[in-house]
Image (cartoon, rainbow, N blue to C red; front, side, top):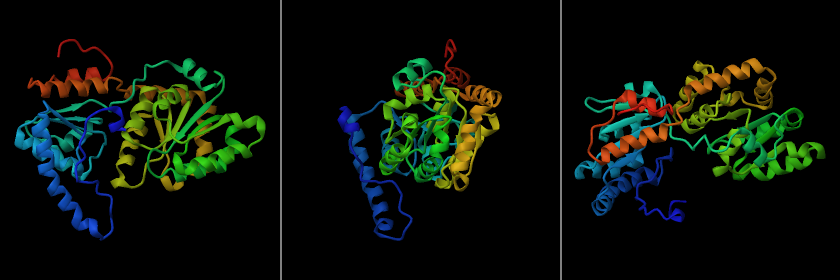
Length: 342
């Protein structure tokens, strides 16, 4: 995708640490990491960037080590309530930290390194609106719409729940279901097995990519994982969410989800408890207008539609070697409000 966009980039030898087995990668990964440091140094020496933006982690180490040698300022952003071990290690290389949750600063902040609450940068939630989005998708204004997507990992449980609940679900609710590649053909077959008058109420999609903003604008409720971007977008659109945290990756998603639950914007269902009945119970929130309204209002209190702008301000300050703006100003910008003079 990056190459097709015309943005110049260079891939490092270092790779993401995904292997949990004792295999060749146990030896090869440290070697790749070591070789990637001079590789990153040469690239940065040639490009001479004014600043570096990173989300941290193991794969960022070569560029961050090289940036320290070349004295290039670094802005690091993290979107989880509980940052991972490799993120905590790489945070020490940052000149400035930006986070999605206030409690993250207490974990990552180091002496003389400012930490800013920015929220999670997302797609522009102001594009179009509910009526325009529904017109684009061909959904009547009076119909209820559930959007379900499992993120990039472990969508099989979501797909199974939809398949089992589908007939009962579409009798009362329209459904947009992001299946991933592996589940798409089966979902299309399930749609064709529905009575003809119900088929257009179920819309399976491999991926939505640029269409996600339209789907969110049109939706009444979301069922999804608890990645930082998902929660930020749901909050920006003021949508109730039934959140099913991905159970692995050190449980980061559960901590993210619990923040939404505490605010009253979400219901949490554990991954191993999510099935057809849980999905039908999620859709039933739409039967209670007062609960739905309360969850929507709570979601809006968490929204930070100006997160991208606030992060960009920090990157520009680093690039221009200026003092970073005041933390209160950055937080005001992240809320989508003009804070006046930085």
